[in-house]
Length: 332
Image 1 (cartoon, helix red, strand yellow):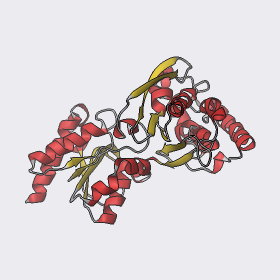
Image 2: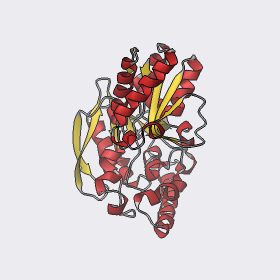
Image 3: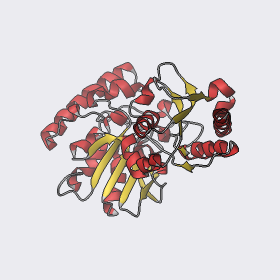
């Protein structure tokens, strides 16, 4: 059996979820392997090896913050935008300044990875405080040469967990970051101006790139400099060795905090179900909350329905219990 969940946001990391799945499976007489996953947003750094370095960078409001990142032995660096430009760093939407918040710190992390000799740099988006279209990051990186293709010191790959377009970033994400309706309009106009500037300066029309609007347009800034935007779940699967792990599995148990219609679009659960189906491997999904319309035709164990408030306060225990009960029923 393969335990391959995403994080249960706010209550359990992907690693904790995988351990809980294995604990429940073990109690039911099964053995298995853990392979925590992520969709290219928060949690990607931990899934791909965990931080081993730190750099002092600018937080979204320009204050110094120590941001952890990873340089693996294979030359792949992993940085998370949330560690440098995250909404949590400013105290959430209430503490944010949506018009001033900058992605400069994320650019500084990429620059640190370049200076350390990384051959490939994975930039995980998600959880940012910014809607600056990547302008802060571009300010740092524009003089560092192309971020991809021939002549690049390193190939920069931006992991996106959404396909939001650049000019939609303020409308989709601005309110989550504290922007009121008037500020959303102002931010959208600024994104329009930025897109025109990127095209004139770098020859890249970020308006046409799926995912360029991720993290408030932070995907678009590096893309203008030559970075490649990719679905985060596919990138994590490649670096984590998911396909090889699936090939040797007789059952996969995955999970996430909330299962809904979006779970099939660029998220771990949907991507894993599709991969496993192609190999004929059955899948079970454990989710904190299950909403209508998720559209998955596999067994789903809803923790809130089974355990109520404990599903939030004792998530790992509930995951283990649900998996144990399911596997014991499956054996009868």
